[in-house]
Amino acid sequence: MSEHDRHQRSDHDLELELDRAIDALNDERRPDLTLEPADELWSALEAAMALRSVMTSAEPAAGFPRDLAASLVTDLPRRSPNGRVRASHAARPVPGRSQRLHSTFLPMTQAIGACAVAGMLAGFVIGGGGSRLAMRVAGGLFTREHPGVTVITESSDRPVGDISWAGTIDLMMQGMAYGLIGGLFFFIARRWLPRSTRAAGLAYGLLLFLIAGAAIISAGNQDFERIGSPALNVLMFGSLFILFGLAVAPLSAAIGRLAAPSRGRAGIARRAFGWLLAVAGVFGLGVTALTVIGAGMVPVVAAITVGEEPPTLEQAAAMITLAAVACALPLIRLLGGAAEAGLLGVSRLGASRVDAAGRWALRIGLVGGASLIVVQILTILNVI
Amino acid sequence: MAPDLVLERALAGDRDALNALCEREWQPVYYLVYRHVQNREEAQDLTQEVFARALRSIGRYRVTETPFQGYLATIARNLLRDLWKRRRPLSRDIDDEPDLASPLPGPEAISMMSHEREDIQRRLAALPDDYQQVLRLRILERRSSEDVSRIMRRTPDAVRQLQRRALLALRASMEEVIRT
Image (cartoon, rainbow over all chains, first blue to last red; front, top):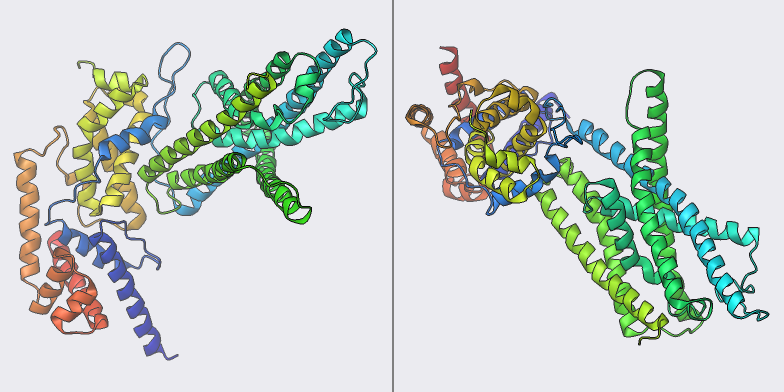
């Protein structure tokens, strides 16, 4: 290519870029320049903007003040316990795209990691240890009421009251795996939970109980009815969800604080811990995604290859609703985060709409899950 | 200075008060920003950034004892200055912008803006005819380059080339004023 051709080509590119920028301004959009912002391009674009200023300014989108207020809720200053507004930080210049990427995705993956680790710890102790304790109480009640009777449990194929270390450790590991999912879901739902850690934990526990309770408290598991008191069993296993929520909220906050930047040697350790958390977050997300896909595929494959009974219409509807919400929420949450940082070319006001979409997805999940758990509990208690 | 009850209630987390505050204050900020970025999308985003910065640094505002509108205006100017520093020096000085002490521009500001508009229109009228025509059609009438190419009976590439030359000529004419 000759020097003349190259020059022609660059002029042509510049004219196309300028033309696209003018199209964007005419459509009331932000001109997104892909070429290096050459002086000539800026000069021409500035002239176009100056010329546009002779026209009346475009009105903002309908409902702009309301959307503006909604998007500002998270920017309200935090108050100290004595009610005073805490010292503020100085206004910073608008960061560049790579800076925004760094300042958004690293903290986001760290927050995911903190919630994943907190979920695993809480799942190990409360999910695993707590359910072992609940089983012990139910088994104790059963052996006291029916001395000398041996019943094999449905969940472990072992006699009631036969507690082994291997079984307990297995249960705690299962609790940890469920806890990972619970921790990640806490990260997703945290945005829509109350600000206070304790209230968020309680709300999350209740939310988890209503959405995922039916996975544990299932009328299909006969142990709930025949071992111990059905009502006490529902209460014990149900309270594990609340306790999980109450534990995961402060734990994730505490773990997140450990990665907060500081100076000196502690700063290096914190930074390293921050990166570890980020890796844990990405790893946790990957493992969970594969688990969820795998768990969804197993019954389908089994139904096709082994010829098992397909789910009923109600079960299928509930499963589809929950699966849709489970897929939509993380997507909305991540999109919301990226949009807020201006990484998608979506405005922060767009992010508030994404936020509202997330709230709706959560409500739908709540109604779908709650209807499932209510049916399970009423069946276990022999009400229906 | 009398306490701003709406602001106080908004800061205390009252959503209705926050709505009322935004309803009361958005106009001057939005139109100031719009004048500089000339597109709705960016103007809305920057207006939101101005409010977010104001709320995040509310402690400093209280010390200054200026009306909240003035505080928002200062933040808006700083934000625009940061924005343009990252792009290139602006032909129009942000510090010359009319003050936003009141929600609507006062007589002096209106006269200044109207003078600026007249000046740009005069400079446009001084350009060669085909330059004027392409800028009127493409920018003031917001037509697409394909439309303009049909009206002007030129190829789209020729229109884009003409448009670039016309804008650079207008820019050069505006720079003459700044230099003098």
